[in-house]
Length: 590
Image (cartoon, rainbow, N blue to C red; front, side, top):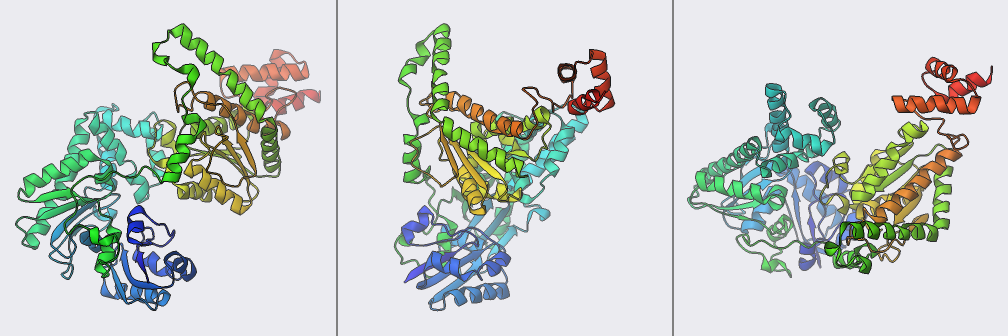
């Protein structure tokens, strides 16, 4: 019989750790969502199979016996033949992963935070914190981000200067003033959205900012003091302390600060970073320790740092084989060439851009026809990309309103990592298909729209997930890549694979691939606007005349199309809020 470990409610995914143990875990969830989603029996049964020996279910906030009984009942309805079902709060599963049946304390620091300890898995869990972000969650990413913002604005009020910590928030948001930052952050004040700003505190601290470093030390001390509190409650004299969560995994400086704080507050404690997944703790408590893979779990967490797999083997192979990842024989010994030689090399390499565009002429025309047709029928164009590809989409979409007076929602750009990714790389943002789907859902994608996925490698999960979702809805789909030999493919309406070849600097797709990609985007959007009647002859008659240069252009346009004097053109424009088309129409009636 099989084994089911339930830690979630939406997607049935098999992690590397659970593969070793023959498990099929779900993603994280709450107890309320768990009960609702467990009604979706077919999908869950398909994921874990019908024959299940035992079930370990770990759910955030599932502390009360009555709540656990309701979840257990729902699980047993799905797997009535399971020999055992153990439902618990997720903290208990983490304790089991770290210490098995033995004593210990865990410090969890991610979006939220929690400190908990046990004498054994049969005894009650002692907790300090973990009540949620409205009740502090000291030491969490949310707490650090919020306190960092408070401190940045306090210093600005005191000095009227943008100091280092405030500058990190401005850089991440793409804003230039504290006044602009406020409405930008208030667009999304959810727990996870606010927590994402914690990176600004870490970045400022790494650059030596005193305020940021003190903030991190205070947070580390708050967590360490909770460990001391739990140790006293449980009468631990030499507590074992496991540190787990996204902050400890991704911010080694924070891990070191918490460990230093522990040495001050609990000098006899021993701490380590937990690398055993909490999902396997749930399996252990469900009585599954004899299963393949689970017998290797340490009774006390493994203090050694384990390398995390970059990606599954198939994706790694696909990355390595991408045309843009190959070395360019024409640019070898690049670091030994003179500046004039480098300039000549760059100019010669641009010839491959023109050849690549010509090779995909028919596909580009098909894509342009699709975009023009969908926009003409009232649909929207969405560019979806990550990194350089995403930024190119942002540049093209942002030019539509001022150039053609197009509604801002008609052509939109979605970049992995959000607006902050335009100015600073957002690590890992492109690796989630689900995030790409969520971005399109949030914008209410319909079958009238068209989605253009932009990925130099043609294999970016964020982009592929968005395209798969768009195709299922019936929306138009285009994939624009510079990797004709890509091995990872999804079905789309139009594929444009530009053979730009290896880059001068290996893998730097902002070069030839970026140039070719931008030219295709120029064609898709401009041809659509021409077909929508937003261009007359080859003149930009829908220009938004918002500055002196554009107002002077508007005057020239009106004069060219009506034969009026400069004064007459300007008078007509001023009377019609500088609308070129309205001024032309008025003067043509005279």
